[in-house]
Amino acid sequence: MNGFIDALTSQTFLQNALWGSVLASIACGIIGPYVVVRKIGYLAGGIAHAVLGGMGAAYFLGKSPLGGALIAAIGAALLIGWVSLHEHRQEDIMISALWAVGMAAGILFISRTPGYNVDLMSYLFGNILMIPRRDLYLIAFLDLGIAVTVLLFFKQFLAVSFDPEFARLRGISVEFFSLLLLTLVALTVVILIQVVGLVLVIALLTLPAAIAGNYTRTLGRMMVLSILLGFLFTSGGLALSYQPDLPAGATIVMLAGGGYLLSTLGRRFRRP
Image (cartoon, rainbow, N blue to C red; front, side, top):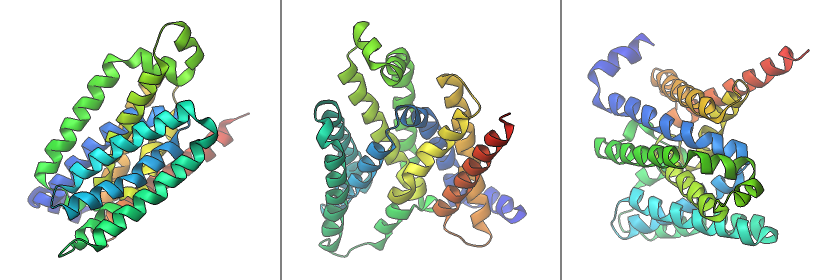
């Protein structure tokens, strides 16, 4: 741990990684509780894996992979959201198809990219140590957009998440706010890709929120605790992985998984 702290004071890439941990924790702490409360982890997984198609296409065209991820994530979120609202019987099939086709399209684009850069594989499994400063600005901007949107429409999101029928009776557009919420999930997925990658993104999006749900009764407090837990897991995983040179993304998720297991066991033991 001392070696990590010493390196943190002198190594720019570690400082960028720590800032990335903070920014990712804000996004997953705000959106994660909605994913847990609405039980839409599978939808978020479909969005996350569809993103690889957009990233592969962007690489093939010589554009920013994060830009491609952003477009693909929002497109997948709107498509999945529309299907979940209007075609309930086809929802699981659509998500599975989008999941598989997105991954397959990404692999095809990657295979056809001249001078293929293997760094793209870091987006599958995460490489927080490779976050450049310019991407931190993009993540901060996305964080700001997510936070402002949730702040402006907190009551509407709350009603849609807990009681859609009541929301309709109050004149709230359930379809619009459901799609908007999935769009925010898509933005969060793009942010978390940098930290833990597409394969592990759902763990960081849901585990801190699930732990927070064991100890809080209100959505606002759940968000605050989720942000703190997210930063604890990301920074702790970063520190633990540094000295033995372990994959940072996998270490972060293992730490979050261990925290969720302990939280669940502790809750069971506390019950009379």
